[in-house]
Amino acid sequence: MSELADFSKEKYVFIGNHTDNHAMLTEYSSSGVKMEISNAQNSIYDITGRAPDTIAYPYGKFSEEIADVVKEIGLKVGFTTVSKKNYFPIKNFLKLNRFVVYGNDLKTLGESFRSDIQLMFFIRKLFKK
Image (cartoon, rainbow, N blue to C red; front, side):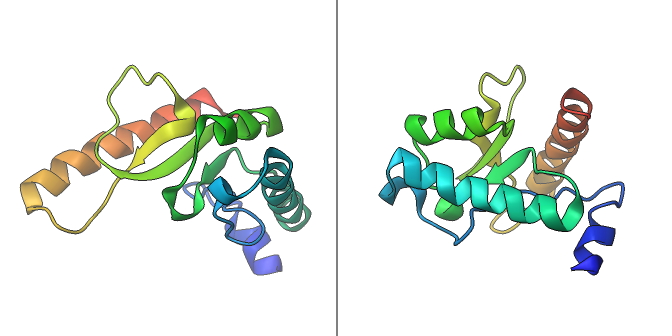
């Protein structure tokens, strides 16, 4: 566990939430969603000394109700599995698309990658503690 604590202190490392049991959140009640996410938040905090600001929804499955619970818990960024760029201005940080490395030519990958790097620095600055 100390390895994860040390790793979490690295400049370009983000430790995010992915639920306590890799739960398909759309199959849970609001209270179940809250429990899955909160348990993971607490476990990660116990190990690293910091609670995550982000969640990657298991299987990419989420809903408005789930996003509301995520927001209530205090997470600021949610990643889906929708494979496309995120364009500014971003209207909802709890429904960000994911950068996918496979299936594109190098030029397309390069353009997408540059976009997501800018997003990473923007998010880090926006939610800096």
